[in-house]
Image (cartoon, rainbow, N blue to C red; front, side, top):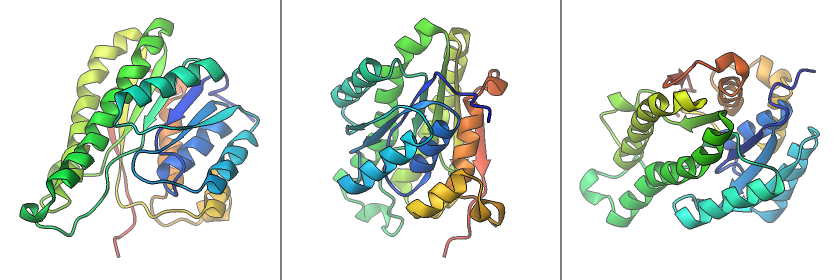
Length: 254
């Protein structure tokens, strides 16, 4: 089986939950990359679940570590990248998955100040800290892949959640701007913009990364669809794809 990302190191913030980050980490491992799993920005996951995921990633024959770090904290992010470099090597692939909390129910005038600021710190500040930490080694090695997780049609949204949507619009904008700046350094920067993507159970995630029945019979975008696109953007075939905001059709919201 071809392993096009063998020898690379991928870091996926927010990869221990039940969504796109976890499937992305598993898929990068399937493609041969060593993986840095991360938790700590918004949600705390059980230690037993983290160990189970770490083991599942290593089952693909790659090395993996789990680092707890809040991506809104620049110091914590720098230490996470330093640990990754010490234990696995410089980070070649960064997938900005960790983001803010989703709460579409409140009128803008009722949104708590701290909640608003927290969402934007996670969506924009977190992306800033991780990209800033990743670029020096990527530039030095003249190879890097950065994929930011955005949101389908966020620029067209006319309803809540306003903070979350503004954060995704900012991610798209910074993707386009930085992609021009970093392309001469051998670094590509793109974004994947999913619609509503329901969570997977752990068993479903493992089945989907192996392209089992769940994958073959799917009717809408899943975490694995997002992960497959992210992995493709990291491959040699996507060397000259830059500044793209690629939508993935999701499920109808219930």
